Length: 143
Image (cartoon, rainbow, N blue to C red; front, side, top):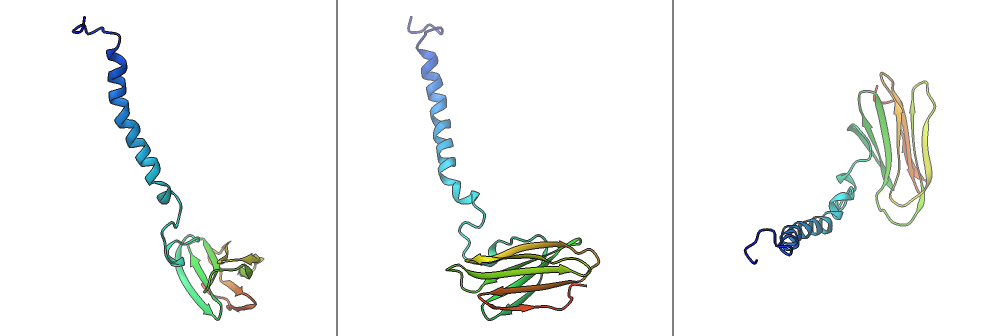
């Protein structure tokens, strides 16, 4: 009876022998991957992860932060980033295509205001950004 292939106790042992390593591998994968699922996890600087699509076109620095502009073929994007992230303070970013209305994102933020994106195919744009009451603005650019 011990050599019988139809022994009723052999199936659960074989199943446990196969499933145990698979479950252990699954647990390891689930435990080790949460840091890689969060965008920007482990990134030490604000430049590590961009929130705008396209290539960086201009960075305009002012006393309390910087205004970053990005451009694709069809769109322009802007974000205002504080030099010293921390406590919430008034921040704003605005991007206006020539002949259109400005896209504005303003409020109390701790690190950045934006992104704001406008359709700017064959159009110039005007950008403004401020952090804690100090800021900058551009004339018509990215023409």
